[in-house]
Image (cartoon, rainbow, N blue to C red; front, side, top):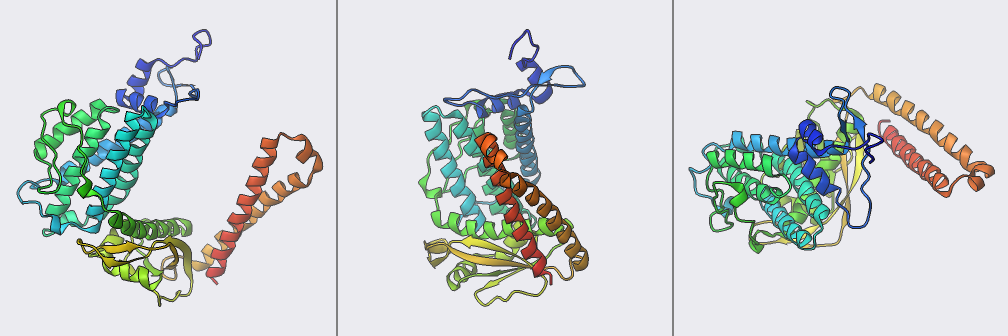
Length: 398
């Protein structure tokens, strides 16, 4: 950036357009130990001020935090009326608490070594990827059930409480405002006999989260990873076949006997899969057969056996593979889907032909920069893999 070139970014302009927390978040995210910071600069057409799309990530994460807090506040009414009972924790509760403790440990270690970007990245992936994308989805139906609501509420409040404490150094303004709303809704977010969350009128004066090894559960994390991988695969299949958002397909999972036994230990598994995979029914077992006209995907899973004190699968075993089937007969126009896939295959083959023609040209291979040649080879390999996947899906539809 040079003032004479007019390509500098004024931090006050960033604050005006994106917010102070977005500025702090992005600067911390870009903080590296050995490399220069790369920041493309653009001029905002409305204000004429210089900014950078880099700050969009900070603004988007601030919005995510705020929306998660709003969701929590709308669902925490009456959360302090009943005593927390750790025996009523579900798999998703034990999993998110374990993830939270692992994240706290990682953040402390990274901050202690002045690895600011690493600590923030750990928080970002926990809050957005684990808490928002999966835990909030997993408890939405429980928050509507009288019997399940109190436990889900208390875990939700505790995890949000601890997350705000961890995020505060990076995003002080939005987290302080969220803390005020949380205090007004539920002052004590501790989990009785399990985890403390000392109250504080202001977040800036609140205790930093304390270590709590009792929250760790490698078994719950591994078991939920199995469920999550199946759900992610189901979501991807939905997207690939172009299912309407309101469609609720049936999912079948062909797995080993050991994996099937592990899934049977999960209480309310059907409800959990319906919530996080957006399906109508979920069936699993070693004897599952692939229905005709089904979309298929392979999932690498980790089998378990035995149980621990929480009724979860016990011993982690070697990884295994399972198959996810999604019958499509009543969900889409099969003939139209075949035509769509055929067009995609034809388009990909044209891309592959151009790439192969370049690579067959000796002048290109010998005279072009190594990086350009490597990029062309990678493109050809990726295109071949895409064609293979598309042809497999087309064959599955008959």
